[in-house]
Length: 429
Image 1 (cartoon, rainbow, N blue to C red):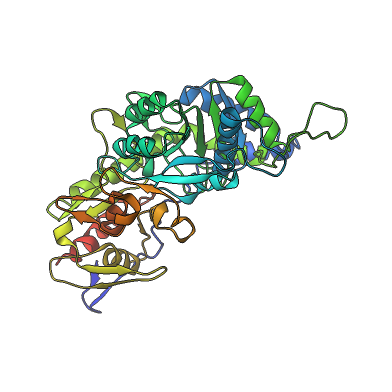
Image 2: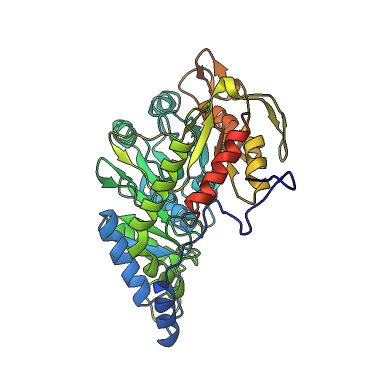
């Protein structure tokens, strides 16, 4: 870790990334096939193959390959709105004037489609067991807003949430579920793949995901009618006419056959990537023993994550003072204590990449006026009161305050990871 002669930290020569693409060679074969056969557009053998293979893998009947995971989420939310409230007027969203219950601790791609469709996201607080949507807060939200009929859930960092409980609440209140499994491809809950639990399901092949196409996403369903609707909308909603006929708003959201070639070449390595990610998680878990920290949790009885990102959270009484503005953090070093800002700075000093936990949506400037529901207290009014007694009133804000994502690249060697662990340990000295 240290060059004793120079009395300084020696960084890695090559950067250790948070999570970068891991390529194998088959990807180039299928991309070349697309080039040589001149199928460079949004149809072709690669698209047909990835749709078939991933539908079978996840356990659904139909899959539609799309340009991005966000495109999949947008069309899923639009379809849910149409099913619940009817077709939108031209240039209006299907959720106009409607509220939607959404995971709070997630990337904004999960919830932005609600805004695209002119709806209002109501953010549901997080629970500590899996860092996902809290079923108790969701049930409370239905008492406050009994007219809501759509829930958008995400599985944070590849860890399945409390799916059975959320599905039971949705059924009780007659609500549909859009499942964002962008981060959790290959993860299972009670033996069943994530991406198969919602009424509409979405995955992502973004460059840092467990398998990648450099871009791309997929809509998953058991409904042939829904799959055909999504396919139509994604190709500018063209009608079956000999000329270009359009009777509703459409989008240019289809996946390229070239991108599909990359995804096709990645699919056989999904389980290998998951095993590598799990080994990284377990090395952190072992290497950080004795420190006042714990790893991102998962339900070891019912679920198996894909371990996309390994994260840690610092014990409350081991936090040094830290404050975050809109774009810059500050902290005060303290013997025996640390904070995410200090650890991330220390990791960066050896040329390794970490990241803060996703900042909860209710704390984002663009969504600060949206309703926010916690299982206890007054929700929005308590968003800055992290701890009351033994538990936070705003769990998402508490995890954001104390948590961080660790370098989780599956090309990181055990020796490199050991140096990252040493740097983390040094922050508590």
